[in-house]
Image 1 (cartoon, rainbow over the protein chains, first blue to last red):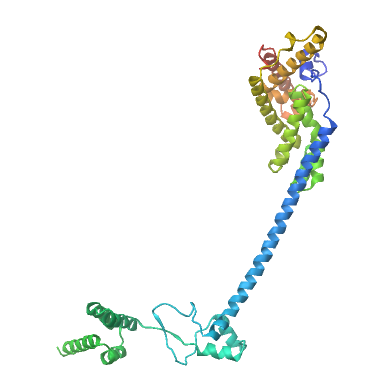
Image 2: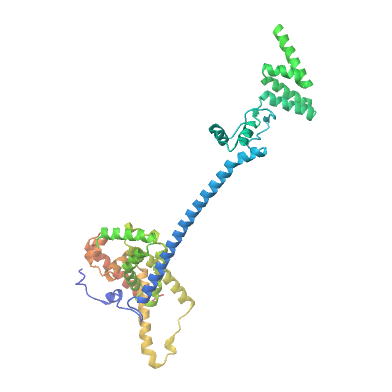
Length: 208
Length: 193
């Protein structure tokens, strides 16, 4: 079947667009232009929106940077202020297992920034440097000391010798020889009794 | 334009349009507008008001979904024809619902003798246009494609065969079957409903 040889029948007329109701024909120039304007406007809007997002993103990044620098400056300035006012901060006031030794002239624990300042010999001023060095040292207590304190609290504070006894026994398990001696001398009556008892037991055992 | 040229041109224009370049979009628009309009006009048997409505819907959808267009899978005009086909389906569905809701006014009972001839001819044309539209809508996609290639794009059998990757004989056979299928639907008494 060749295209040119094919007879032009009614079906060709129907399918070839020869049937059209009134108003049919070429697309109106107005529609074409209106659609072009409408679709182009959508693109312009899209481009503007994208640009606005980009600018907003950059502004947000800039603001975040400014806030970060401000916050960093605040944090850097904070230790000097705190030390000058003699305030105890959350960083230095640690858990119950630590204790302050007031009045001791030990070298203070300091933050890395402070240490860097001291090491470099460039503290903000001498007053701050002195205050940093004067800050009480945080001494970590031994397990014996902690348990002994707890026993003291039970015995003297709660008036509960049973609990105090348990704590003291456990404390003595971790005690060094020096600690045992000091406990036998300046401990509470219960601690002294336990120490004495333990000492006698030890002597009997070594004799036998 | 050869297929590789078409592909690289459309890829460039598509990327530029997505980046917000309105001149790229206008180039795509100008290149495809006539093809889409001709296709919709063919499918709606030239009813200009309906054609304008569908063409408008097609382009506005195309703007919205431009990022989904993939030049490697087909030309921009082909992609638009797909959108137009969906828009046509929606239009015909709405049209059918409208017809169901509002029974047409029978003018012939009330028209005076002087206006009868013109009104009758117009009705007959409208009826034929409706039947063509309904018959084309009822055809399977491969029949519709081959008829479109012949009657809208005015392609020869050889060109259609080359595009579809078939022999001219197979395309002739397909065309014959498509025309027969069209005739069968067109000649049904209630084809336009």
